[in-house]
Image (cartoon, rainbow, N blue to C red; front, top):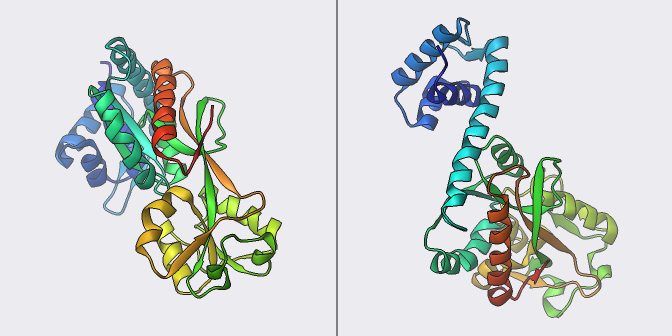
Length: 307
């Protein structure tokens, strides 16, 4: 007998979590239901897919291979669904959008209201996550597209540039930069600069900026969020670089931190919309990128829209 798509989804959930309870929660079913379906899948295929014990769950070698191929099957099925959605009209149906936590909360508030007003049939399911997790979810079909920091590598990805966002220097309110309107490159020489933890494109970018400006990137205190960086800066633990949209949202509320632009060749980060190259909705995603550029150009003056 041919396995069902439901059984393949359960197997992939087990492969992702290596835990029956968490796999059941991820699949929105009871644990006995998931376990029963997995046993039936093994019976249909005539092989053992999972080694079960109280201590842990381990996929057998053939189980790992079948789970990998199941991901491909499920992705192709999702493409069929997307193709049908596309036929219903441009910018309609449901899209699963992944965003970085350093960007989503400060950008989407400017985009989503107007997007909903102009395209009421478009529904966006939004998920925040780390860069690696978002890219994996996109590759495996759990997300349709990402708003992501560029550059992003991947032969199977399409990128539509959206905007360039300045990075501003943040310092404590009693730092010498507080009395200046601009920061000079020389102001950063020898300074301690705080950065996000490894894995974020902003971490790598700040590390490169420190090398250029002669600053020292702190490896002892790496922030897990932009809020954490801002709070450490306010305590006088060092300087940092903060994206302009975050500055617009959070700095006016904080009397302990000041931000200053760099006068000469100010740094910035580029943001784009990213999707799988062979997605059935590629034309629709390209249209969505154009709509987002228009909204950003008219309502977010802190950034520069890219074509």
